[in-house]
Image (cartoon, helix red, strand yellow):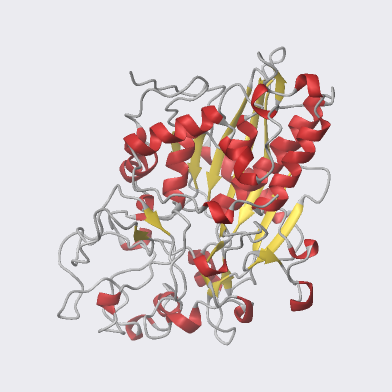
Length: 485
């Protein structure tokens, strides 16, 4: 039997209000790690906590985690110590920052303090307080399947199908500036951020926000839109390109010009600069969170029910409601036989009319001659609502500005890497009264990160059902990379 659970809609969510709240939170952050205005761009995502006060009917919305970033490390740069941040896309940064916030709130709960998020549940577990929910904001459609959007008009296209870059030089549209960051003949250089000496193994988002060139386009370097073998723009409908590659073992992209260029509804891995990555696209991860929750395996030890986003809000950008529905919801809507605490939980999908000031399109509009080529920002920013070290700025999977001498030390680690989050979780376990520990954490043989994840049995059962019924090609985790402690 299929159980579809819609999160409680505590109030009408206004997309522009959420976008404005997130943009303002970003504006208040320190300068470090932010794009250089008029030359660099980035993407933004955030988790917003919505709290409805029972006695006053008032509704409070606050950003509890915010992330920026467009990069992802190659698979050879992954560390068996868990001390490297593999995926620095904004959506992933925002979700991992939210884990830090949830761990803090569970700390308060198990210590007898006042948590704004959790209250006691059965069997020594915890649940959301009545009136509390979470929504997810992203300034751009997630990379991967959600980015394969039909092209409708030039205003909504990040890569207008014009025949020559030269034809746009000096125009307000900035067509040459867009191709300055995307031309196949120059892409290797123009996509490098200021931290280029650190970014050899890193690739940017690789979806409609960059509209990266594909191999079939390299024959015609002056063409800024998709083109066929004649070097001319294709006639008829077309779609925005994604640089995320289909996972092996399933359908492949046809690479035919026009609307059939991509296979749709399939799992994709984020592209790497010169080598593949093991990071699934943000579309795939959001779809997974819609069934397993965004709390992950470790926090599932403590929670009676998985945590789901009630709403996903997208900022102004190329957008298709039908495509978002396909990528984030439809693929997993038929999953059944989930363990207690898990369900198919589709979020409401909303679109804002407000564009992120540091989007690629806005950066191109503000770009001035002589300021260098436009490129994605090399840094990723995480801010979350925690009392200790709320800000974490990284580049190439490590803390921003770390010298080679400090590489491999605790000071070089991002607070969002697996090892740091695991240590935070172990601190939570240590601070929990032994008599109040959930049953799944009472096993003495739990030592490694892998052990604790596998011991979260309900979560692993839910993941097995999701994988077998909807996402069978999702790559298996490499156990050798998860044996740290």
